[in-house]
Image (tube, rainbow, N blue to C red; front, side, top):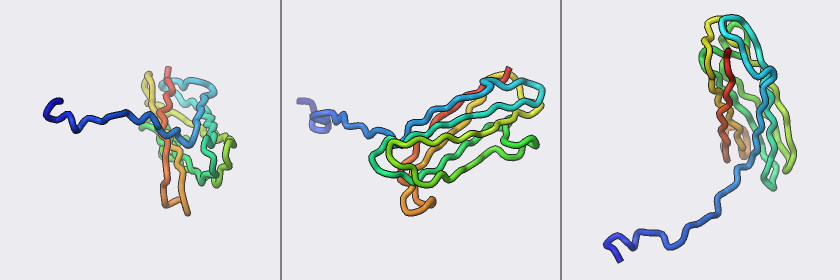
Length: 136
């Protein structure tokens, strides 16, 4: 036995907690156009994988060249979905608009689905997903 052998774990615990939500995203159309105004709709399907109802909220954060409005001001949107029963699914749509100075490339959006307890100020669990859209 080595000097620090007592610090090693005897067995590895493979009980990894499953996330409470399954998130499926889809773009329509699947791309935006550079140097001109264009929009795309992001469809987000959220399924409650847990065995208990979850008080749920969703937040979508956009990079600088994309926004939710034509002026380019609104880049963060949060929606309170209420209580999502076990094994049920909810679909939310977001309209994303690019600015005139959006360059070609891929843009990453951060999608966060949160589970709350008591009210929306107390977080129980959250699942983050990075969603990518291409500007051509």
